[in-house]
Image (cartoon, rainbow, N blue to C red; front, side, top):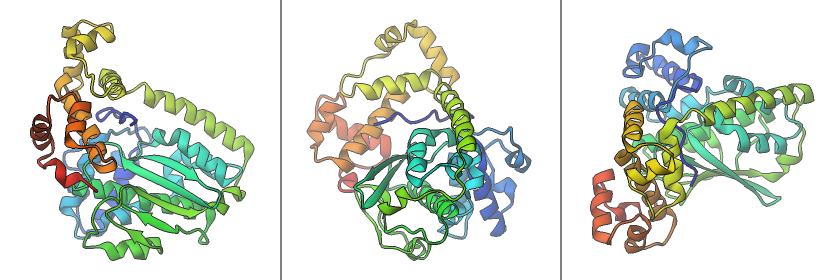
Length: 341
């Protein structure tokens, strides 16, 4: 598993929040209500210098779930995320020589845009398979999980249509949660079979697209855009603070989680200094350890056949009962509710 991006670092452009606010405005919801708790005002959404965090994404999306009269709002908002809304990243995609080059670029640089999901690609020469998993929302039983998956899949279709034209189409869409009440909106938007309650979220399309040339390909623009995205990726990678370093360390060694004193030694810090740094980032070592254990536990429950005893051992618990109690405390649900999700 790849550690998630920093939750509280404001390093991303606000377009995803802006399109949700715009969608809510068409339903008569005031922008001030849509932005409640984000610390943003509507004017900031139109300013190039504005940078937002995943916490602000999270707050705005939860506001939308609470305020919207349309259960398919995330699908609608994703349709507003045209390729030009992605800034220099979008120009790099549009100027790629072929669609295969665009896919390769996306796999390397997608994190510069503050993606809602981590992505992975596979190609067997006849079919391209794209899988995605929410970066900060690991529980597929929660509405916010469904919201970010809907937004991400809809946005992906919008960008693909902008690049390839109306002849492009998905051949299948999979999602990890049960069919919602607005399942017919999926069929209407994606125009292909949609399967619910699957092991992964993702989509497929015809692999023949990869060999095609991009209509607006331009080598100079593409080289310039890639160079800028490389700098942006470095800035994003360096922005996570000490909490991001700890997440990476914890996820690299599941089952052998060090205590805070050992972690401080690994980071060449005094434990007291480490605690102060984490407090300044609005977290604690205990919270980070619980977060990593939660993410790993949900991953194991959903995508492996490991027993509760195996998972307990992998996460550093003495027995399955202790793991079950901790998991229920973290998620409000018992482990069995995540099996086969």
